[in-house]
Length: 101
Image 1 (cartoon, rainbow, N blue to C red):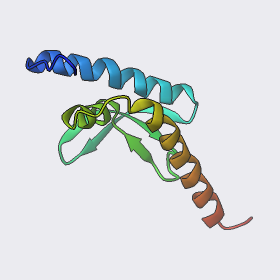
Image 2 (image 1 turned 180 degrees about the horizontal axis):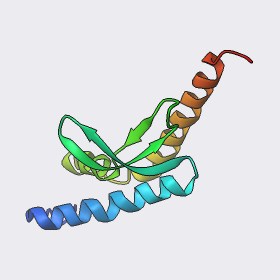
Image 3 (image 1 turned 45 degrees about the vertical axis):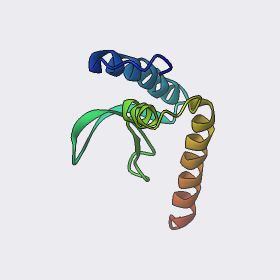
């Protein structure tokens, strides 16, 4: 980012070289799985947590791309615990809303 590359291919390679490993780190927690997710803009590689119980979906490359566009640096260190906290919160909300057996 500091060199301000203009070549789209080079930018995409940089985004993917950060985004895909970030997705891998999320999957290594055992709470996320790789998937292909579809939205209004098409399909893309994503990670999903809490399947059928909230379906949290994160597109790791897009996550990085948005920060590239805003020139935000050093965001992954803070983003990881925030994302994991959101998973835990959604899990607690889902579990507390479930009827007791």
